[in-house]
Length: 426
Image (tube, rainbow, N blue to C red; front, top):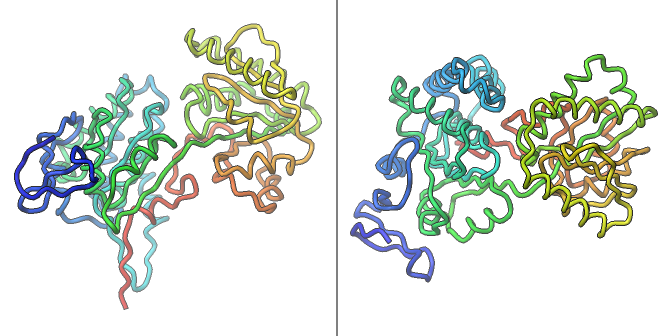
């Protein structure tokens, strides 16, 4: 435990969870076992009292635009579509559109950042942490981000670009600190205690772990729990699409690009319309052709998918495995829908498949609050009866190929509202 002098403020009855304060009541982070990828311990101490900014300042937009330019000009970054997508999102033109959308003048209202945002990134989606960080910066906050401990090349590329941009935009240095550390509750306690907003992207287990670390009475928390997503394909509309290879690429980006680990990645493909048999054949054939060229299936992934398939078949008589030439795609044909099926989901190309005659057949599946994104090929208006039926699930309805597109409205949260503070002036 760090020994830094001053009063000891107990966060739990367990003495190992106590946090040391200096005489100014600021937590000193120098002796915590934290690895700093961007920033340092001194910045963590200073951000506890430093002034916040208004949202969408020119300085922030210029800084992010510089990061964007560095990434877009990097030959290494171009090898990772998720990094390039992030870079395009951070372009000045894109951010100016966001500023225009969210910073409309409100009479008698003044907005500012909330203070310190503690972001806990998921361990299995490499670029997610950067979107959370950028959102916090745009909203005028100080940001401390726990980045994935896994050695993702995308994380290294992005962090290198951030550090390079900070050399030019030194005014941004106090506003972001990127850290890595092990499963040490005392560090969770310390970072949570200085946070005005805690954002947990890591799923149910991480949420439960972080909730053992108290926050300030006025602090708020945003949690992104374990979710699942589905795709609905109108077979008649699909058959009319000329460039089916592009559809396969879009679906690949939604699923295999993240090894189907993202909450937005479809786990179930639902077919509708009058051309299902032929549409299925062409869709999976086109996808398989793409996978054979671009996707490397690891042995452990193949074994896990087959194990999940057999366990599911034992549990549900209404489920059968579709025959495939190899294990790049595992398709589990479902004759009866149940939200319980999602307890047996897997990744790396593991799909439930269902033929649907009436959109309201999806009501039970989509009434589960774990249901996040519905991606589609067809007409979004067809889903209105499902939404109007009173379901509690589904936060996003987007075309296939757009599930990973980040927005400030996410998982039912307006992140701009949650990351800013509004002052009423009368």
